[in-house]
Length: 339
Image (cartoon, rainbow, N blue to C red; front, side):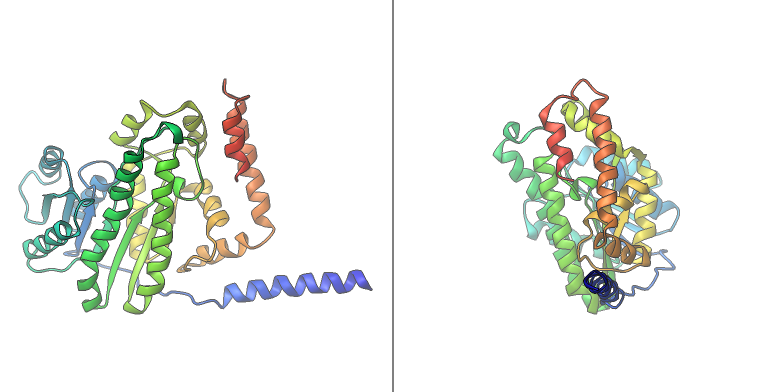
């Protein structure tokens, strides 16, 4: 009798949990059918994922694109590559988004004037730097630099674009986080910190902006084949490389196409492959829900299934550790234990 009562209570609790998630506030963004002539601002767009996004928006969708980046030489090379005919649909501005909000605001206003007074429809915060080294080998000023570029740069650009989006009652804002923004990674103490910060910003901001019909997309790409990754690999610790390899490698085009797809849907999260989906299930918490897939992730995260998924990740990464010369090192085992 007592066992039956306990089982009934457990069943009732499980049912209540599911009902709460089924009837929690769901956001219903409208799909962006036509991207022609939309004004898209991309930070860090002179190379890598940002540059591929600019290429797709220009060539496949006929959008107006503004690229913000620091390196003027690389920016000019990007402009010649993407628009050899000097099309006015592409504007490249050299600006350091991490230093001054006023400078960022001036750049956004310049972009709006250049594109025939067309406000920003989509903002993609793609600019980022990283130092792949252990905590005690990372300088305090490097932590500060990464926080300014990876986090505050996104804050400044979002604040500069938001007023015109609110006036029009529509808009999309994209934050490029990382799978390293979903779980801690050996050697990424400075990088993970900034990407976790973006997750908190995105979740809070979506709650504030839903009534304005402005939707956030938070992107969690794995390692991507870009010039930045090649540079990072020169100094990346072996432990870090061993862990990161378990998530695979994608091309910038693959990542960019999924970002555009998720942005058009207004999907709050954008993940890649089965590993990305499982990570999202494990780490979604109480984040905003815009699709049935995200609702499924929320339910799974609150159920016993999340423990099974954790076991899969622990086993997979653990096997990768044991296949290397570092299998007896303490650091990888500690890394796996936090999953």
